[in-house]
Length: 216
Image 1 (cartoon, rainbow, N blue to C red):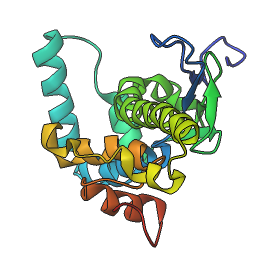
Image 2: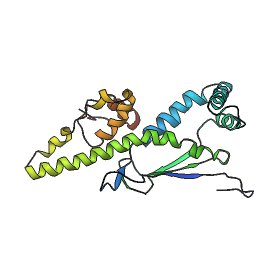
Image 3: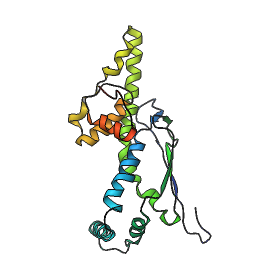
Image 4: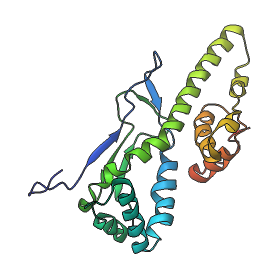
């Protein structure tokens, strides 16, 4: 969106699953958005950016720019203005987490809420994809496994109640860091109950205020 002088004021973007390499996979489960927003856009942003003295933030940012791109004229005024604002001016509209979203349809949209910070909308694109890819993929994969287990349990007269534990998650020892294991397992236990990735229980309780049996 532009103002009367043709200057960009608002940018509207979306997060959309565009395709799958798995034949017949037509939907992807949205999961992890609440964790992303609370952990990165609120808690971590406050701790590592807004609560840090502005000049320290600007020196750090300039050092990264110079080290990565070489001396440049980009400047840090936009970062200083964001620090002065005191929050990340973005608005998200999303389907409920757990929704099975058709390929090529948006899971959520993002738009800046302040005309001076149109650049913020796509600034975090890589972070958003990095954080959400794993739980969305894990949840979608777990759901496929659950359908397979249910199909053959019915064909063979198996106990459907046991399906919740037939794909028990022992993968934590092969994951990158406890946080990575927990975010991945969040997708798994959105479908199954069986898991030995105990940090997931803390993540679910902290970011989704769930109580009672989460994993076992």
